[in-house]
Length: 334
Image 1 (cartoon, one colour):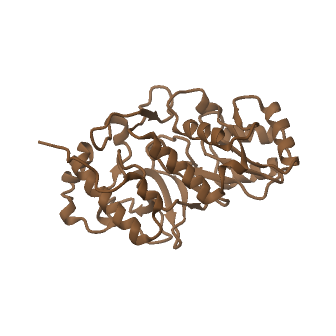
Image 2: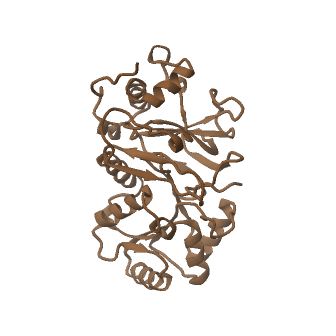
Image 3: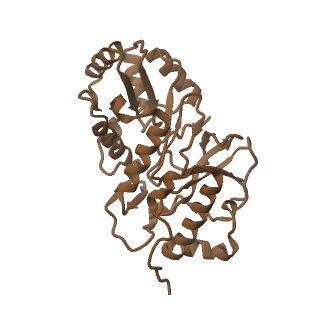
């Protein structure tokens, strides 16, 4: 019979202090042992693969839970009750993923620390969020993050926009001309709508796409999308955010679709034919994510994304596996 152990062996928030590969590997193995003992679904999955703490000695030996499990199972570590349930977007009739989050403070610390690692102090920015498809439904982890970043920015002009593109144009032109640092974060189809309707020239604004056409426009390759957005906003680079419902951390790209992870997150590339083996650097395969912020769900996720890893630890998204649903977090196929 499955029983829970009594307590975690490390402070959850200590993962945000990781500074080296050795610290990351030690924390990952510690969390693996804890989740093996305290997460019933993950324990059963590991047992099926004949993996247990005694025969797992390095990161590549840790089993990665297929992301589809979040659609049919409650992926929980420990006995704490969830504070919130985040859900993925999906077309009518499709089954959505649910991420039961038992400690929102961990999520908040994760996205705030990552933002400041890549972009600096949130209080230096005005945050403009163009996320209509997310605003129109409940349970979006992206909306939760954007809302909190808007509040933490403390800027009087920070806020959400649904369809008020004319108002957004006037706001962003005024802010950009004043020299204010602005982050415009938006779902791809909405940014395209804006860029085509109101082509402008920006100097002090970061334009960040979160992926996803949500059935509103045809899918297009990343290079085509970014070229249209660069011309429409008059910027040299388009930034990107890579995240998903099942994770509590995000990777960011400052241009060209090259993503970097925060110190407590790592991407590995698995072989598409043998999911228990890993690809070499620069080889295309399935993306496995270690997200140590997922200490109370599952930190080891095998996604349905295809990509490749670079020698410096950065990575690219190259599409999705066949027959998998497109879910709009930077999942554009080449």
